[in-house]
Length: 99
Image 1 (cartoon, helix red, strand yellow):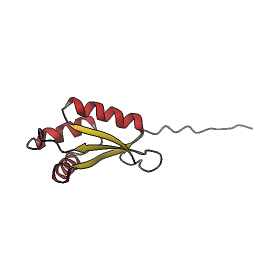
Image 2 (cartoon, one colour; image 1 turned 90 degrees about the vertical axis):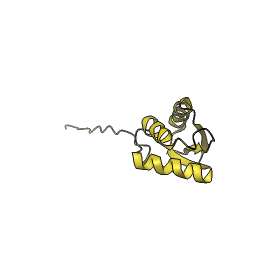
Image 3 (cartoon, one colour; image 1 turned 45 degrees about the horizontal axis):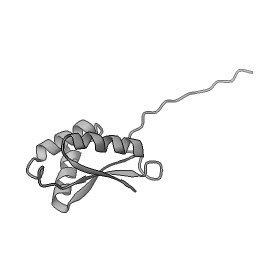
Image 4 (cartoon, helix red, strand yellow; image 1 turned 120 degrees about the vertical axis):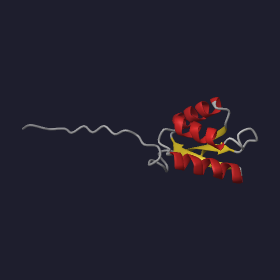
């Protein structure tokens, strides 16, 4: 008897994998420094979080600056901490919260 096994590799897409498997949220906070630099914030978000479109990043930035904070993405803890670290290089105020 011959047995065949199919191995499938899947690339993780944090924007589609939310819920109990990816319980950490990256939160963008309003700050006084970047409030008038929307394009810089959008550029940082799309550069660091490559799955975000320009329109999604703009919506996130506008919402964060209007109400004080906005979730950027939900992902595994290590990925969330990586995004936080990279976004702070751009001078943004970012936190990681358990969902």
